[in-house]
Length: 95
Picture (cartoon, rainbow, N blue to C red):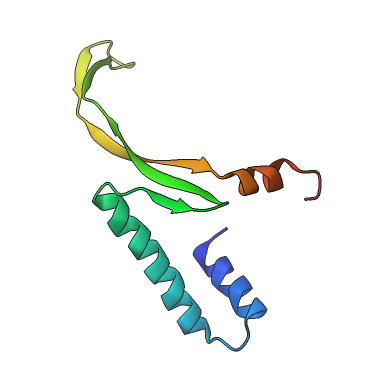
């Protein structure tokens, strides 16, 4: 789902809110998640899931095109683990 679709759905569910206000709320939400992850804080939304930063250590790898060994630098990635409630909803037959 695109952010614009989310704004439209939320606006239809809450018609008393202006679309610009809904967009501001969504932007603030994503901004707070991003800032927390930037400082290696774990984000837990009970029942939905947990976002956390995983650090992939630097290593040597092989370039599949040339076969030469290259150094891959350390990098961070976002890891998401679903919560129990979300997992149950995804795996139920009530879709």
